[in-house]
Length: 389
View (cartoon, rainbow, N blue to C red):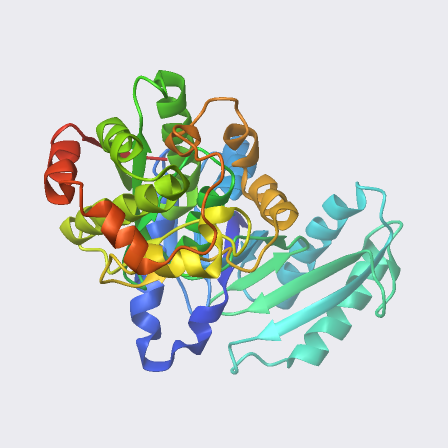
């Protein structure tokens, strides 16, 4: 018998003739995620992946890492045996005994016969294996309607038995749906937006606007730490840290106070688009939610988006703050996001920001600024980091 992990994926089953492409990419992403575990191998099977070769003491850590990979649906600690029926039953009994140690008592057996040449069908396998377990596992009781434990048997190239199904992140493998640039602040919303779009298979790079000396090294490190958390599932992230202080100062000195936030956001979008195109991205991603703040009204978003020529994705657009906070806790970014280090959006804040900006007014106010010169000077002072998990 061989102990391994049986890994299942979800949406890829729907991809028809394109399915091999998605499977190969998912294997690649899974192997990258397991590079830290010496000897771990990812084997592509028929509708399943199998992970073996890792140290026994690393199994839970390997499972934890697997759960973060986008595209994987669930992972099961399993036993692989030959297909001789008694051997299969003994393997299933071992899994049931392990599960009963948790204080549970009732079970049922589910069987899947992918090998259609196997002499027993799925119903027979489940019935006969269930009888064997009832006779040979002390304390086990059958409950086919609401069991504590479901023992699964899959007959494929070999037999696989497991009694635990651990959910994974789901979604699509990163890189299967293009690339986008995430405007990553140090707040709660943008990391959630980045995670959500990456879960749909989009590879992300990130752009952060840093207002030194008003925002310091701790604020910068906070964003790097957030990018590292995202990279656990999204893969390596190219992070652009853009020097933004000079632009903000110019806007503050030359533009109407109530328009500061909108004009600042328009500069952010221009810069992010420029960097996105350099990185081969096809869209921008932001953490804006309709009506959350003055710059996120429908009119404000329209005026902000008008300066770019690529799509802007806003995955949290219809979520309220509580929902976004709950999601941030789920993905592990919340505690880092709430660290009390200011980001550039808290610098030069308008006392009474306009909530229904008129395009003509904003463009008139911007006309006194050297837009292209400010952007070029800002980019020359910027830095780029490669963030790895």
